[in-house]
Image 1 (cartoon, one colour):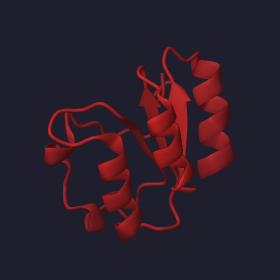
Image 2: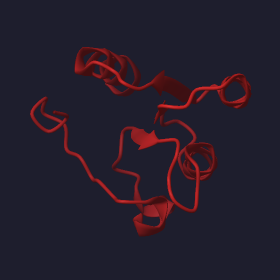
Image 3: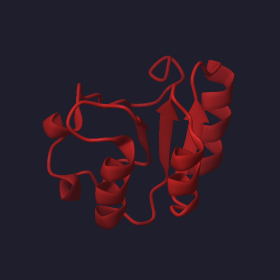
Image 4: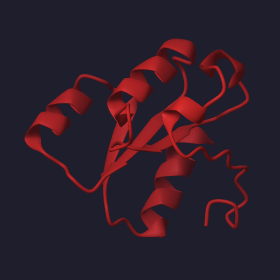
Length: 99
C-alpha cells in the first residue's frame, strides 16, 4: 500500500539485512515492526536516530505494554502504532511526519 500511495519503499526482512545506517541519508522515515528477530524496534530506532537524528521513526506492535509505552515516551523521535492499523492511519501519520 505504501508503494501504491507513491512512496519509495526499501524493505528488509530484519535489521541485520539493512545497509550501514549512515548510507541511508536519502530516507525520509523509518517504519518498522517492534518485535523482530535478534533486535527489537527500539534498539533499531536508537541506532537509526544516532545516524539520522532529524528523521522520524514509526514502530508498529501487536504487543503493546506499559513498559513499551514508557520506553517510547523517552524517545520523542519514535511514534508507536498498535496493530492492526488501518492504512488510512498510517497514511496520515507518514504525511504528518515525513513530508
